[in-house]
Amino acid sequence: MKRKDRLPVPKKMKDKILVEFNHSCVCCDAPYHVVHHIDEDPSNNAEDNLIVLCPNCHQGRVHGKSRKITPAQLKLYKTTKSKGVFKPIYNAIIRRITFVEKDEYENLTSDEISTKVKDLIGFISTLEQGEYYAQELKPYLRSSPYVWVIPMPDSVVNQRKKELLEERRKRIKDNKEEILRLVLECAEVQPE
Image (cartoon, rainbow, N blue to C red):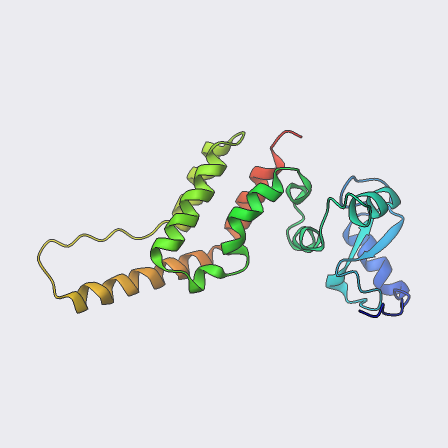
């Protein structure tokens, strides 16, 4: 892939980004020095692609050999402002929350969603203060219970199961930001 030409970040945009992040590195809070392109395209000076890093985090944590912070983490931080995305535990959590973050639940069956929710809630509950966060997440991720008192035709049962699945998907979609906020807040309270 051909490297794109670096375009200088316009002063007005640079000033706006610096104010947004309080002239501090988003990773370590050191005084600002570098405006970084999240997607690593130096010609993309869109506001949602710019973030503030100190030289140490820029070279060591973002571009270094042991690259510990990914563009996906920086993008998520840009929208959530949660330092939890930079904690070591984040990678274990993000593997379990991806189905919500990337709207994968829209194409999953009820059983597949249940398996992913069980894995996420189970993992979260093992963390520091995890029981609290697991309980807070459950209402947003749960399936609606259904009980059949009298025998019903399969077509009625299948239709009701479809409706319940759509209700669950809608609940997750409507509460996506809160789900991500709770998960990232849980990551933030974890010890290094």
